[in-house]
Length: 139
Image 1 (cartoon, one colour):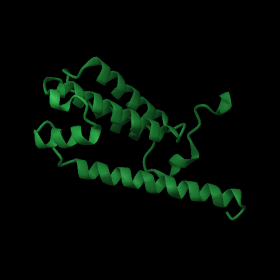
Image 2 (tube, helix red, strand yellow; image 1 turned 90 degrees about the horizontal axis):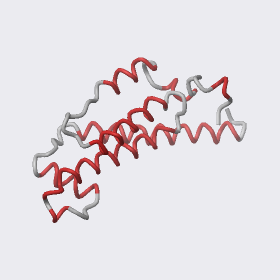
Image 3 (cartoon, helix red, strand yellow; image 1 turned 180 degrees about the vertical axis):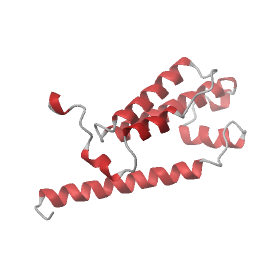
Image 4 (cartoon, one colour; image 1 turned 30 degrees about the vertical axis):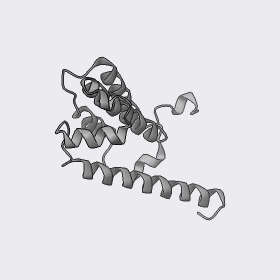
């Protein structure tokens, strides 16, 4: 845990990302939900957005924000699929396939999301390599 006087200090790993906290807040605030989204999905989504925002201060919140976002997506798809019993016990990947095939979701923006996810994984690998090099005194 950070000392209290450092709680609002930017995590040093954020320096590798363009923009600042205001830019991150603006990008996250631009993501909105339809008014018909169930409350449980909305709560998960809000938690994911807040975790993503606070990753500015605690970089390790990124994967937790991602996971919570996927939980929100799965909950939303399950809520939508409630009228289709054959989807009752399906996993997220199967629900996504059905949602795209049924026109619930468009896959036109999903490729961009996959690229973002790949970049995040690569960034984490680079960060871990830097940490190991630093611990070994190579940096």
